[in-house]
Length: 329
Image (cartoon, rainbow, N blue to C red; front, side, top):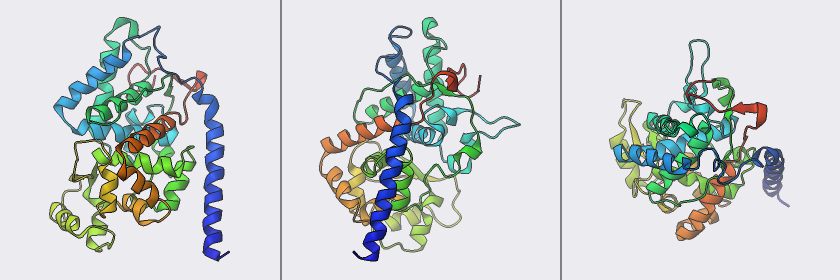
């Protein structure tokens, strides 16, 4: 066996071990999750949240990508516990103000706050539904509004009791990550490489600030589609306002679909961490399969986001139901 083959085998074995350990650790906490969790205390919660998200969506399409992005960044740090929604105080910097989270659009936070207000406007529901579950439902509803798959959401999460910027360190993927780094990061959260590829399609409705990909344009990255590179150079010239962002799927930016994978086949992944899914031969077959079939894509995405929603679920004394999603009780 060649040395490079041995190295690949070692990486795969390490990733598999991480995946097994993470999955085992999440079983107990995820067991309390179930559909219709609020049937006896707030039976109409899903329709209430859906209506609130639809109203926000009609105001701005950014709602979709912003809410999906928020859910991902919440689950990967301290588990799916809405700790990313908590605002900083003069004495404590919360998750949302960590540098890597400054890319989170305000419309995602606003979607959760509005949905929480709509739920609490119903007397029997007031302070009975967690912000973590509201974010999970809002993400599902935003995806469906953009033409993506409608799926059942498992509920029963409690809200986290803390939110610190330092807890974010090393838990979210920068745009420079390669396949091994991405695979290991997802494995630590009980997600496989196939889950990682499928979930990356959340970028199909996402936005990216110029600074996250401008290096690829300036360096004439050979894996970046030349025509797209020219457009990106025009949209993000030197000295551009760092707040400027562009759509990550330039073909169907308002539709939650598998165009993301077809874009990768054409060298049109915006971030290096997107395009590597196709340029690396180990993940390319998964990209090709999801690019070919909408049915396969939607099935894989729903499976992946359902598993992601089980990460680090808080139970018992580990959490509570926040009265205000942005403020710890």
